[in-house]
Amino acid sequence: MTLSSCRFFFLFVFISIDTRIYADCWNQTGNFGIPISIPLNSIPFYNSTWFLLLSISLVVLISFLLYQSGMKKLTGEKEEEVSRRSTRLKEQFLANMSHEFRTPLNAIVGMTRLLSDNNPKPDQINYLNAISKSSENLMAIINDILDITKIEAGRIQLYSIPFEIKPIIQSLYDNFILKAQEKNIRYKVSIDESVPPVLVGDPLRLVQILSNVINNAIKFTDEGVVELNCTTHGYSKSDGNSIRLFFSIKDTGIGIAANNMESVFDSFSQEVSDTTRKFGGAGLGLSISKKLVELYQGSIHVESKSGEGSTFTIDLPFQLYEGKELNKTEIHSNPELRNAIKGISVLLVEDIEFNRIVALDTLTTEVADVKVDIAKNGLEAVALASEKMYDIVLMDLQMPELNGYDASRQIRLLPKPNCDMPIIAMTASALEDEIYRCYEAGMNDFITKPFDTNILFRKILNQIQKEKV
Image (cartoon, rainbow, N blue to C red; front, side, top):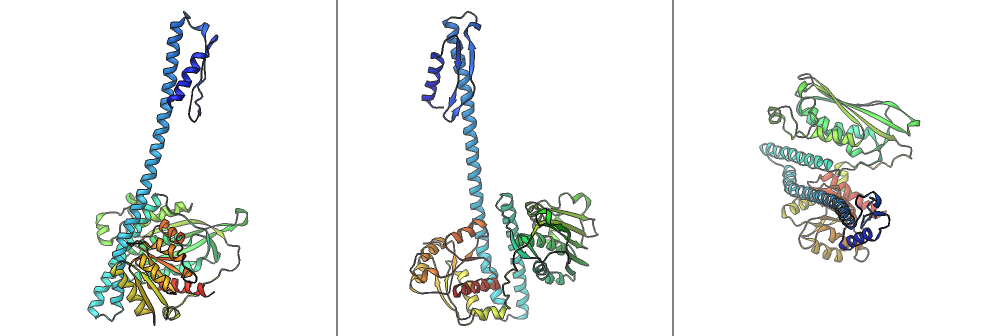
């Protein structure tokens, strides 16, 4: 309450004297809502002394109430600001951590791949495989830590898009069959005929949920079998075309002791330290799956006995797809994919030398007749893009002089046709906000580091084909 409003309140009390004393207070946001009416004839020894004392008491009381209200509002605003600031700092920390981890890993993974493709000696192959597997494990742990932090911060968004379920199940077989074969484990997947071919939901999060559980099953199984089954208990048109799918992942692994069943979905949880040392991992996969299932408004349960394996059951809601047949993207084999983009011209924008080497050598060794120009920062990229037309621009984001976002914006301001060059962000950040910023800056697509060469080439081909349409 300001000083001027205090004066108005005092004036109101002292001039409103008739046979009663009236008092009503308010602050700058409106009426405070405490009207007081006291008959003067009810006051013993009605005289100026009693009147003065009563008026002062009313002023003190109402002023105190106003003070309390103001302090409560001020405290709430401060807490809200602290919460917003904490969220911003956490997001910035996540972005920085993602970048600082992924940038050196990109060089390690990329150099290892290039060496593996360069006819290494038999004993070198073992060393390279060890580096590759260690890098993959480290990348998986980093991704899990980022995912669990994003989920807990409420930064995960589920999408509703049409997708085919059978290719999803097949991809889960393809992704894990080699890992199972390395341990001499039988790995089987099946999908019931009652499951509709096309559903509406978030296929990427579905794959993540199931992958974490399957990976866990294979990790803790030394012999026997791991099975994935997908089925449904039917659906009803009266339910708004909704359908629930049931996924069961069964293994013959070490199982879970009864006293550990309640904590199996807790973050960083594994049964004992010996388990961690033997099987590795941060103990985040099941926790992430459970949190994603809850976001999906589904459920996940486990039945297990120590030494007898485990069965995880996941229940997820989807919508039936009623549109036309989905457009199917042609899947190229590796040779076809590389042949389809041969002879392209590329502007590679990257400030870190090791990452430049990885990207440049990947392009020149796997794509025939490719022509690559290099820019070490955003300013050089804009200058080159203004002088020459490229089939594709591969743009790093965090660079000195001029970052990738601003460089992309400046390229979009160039005269035609240079302003229309497709730009693919090569980012060390996996945060959705960073990806949104890429599109907002005018980029056409993105790929995270360390990058998969087949995914990179497919994204390049997609952009080139769009330009020809």
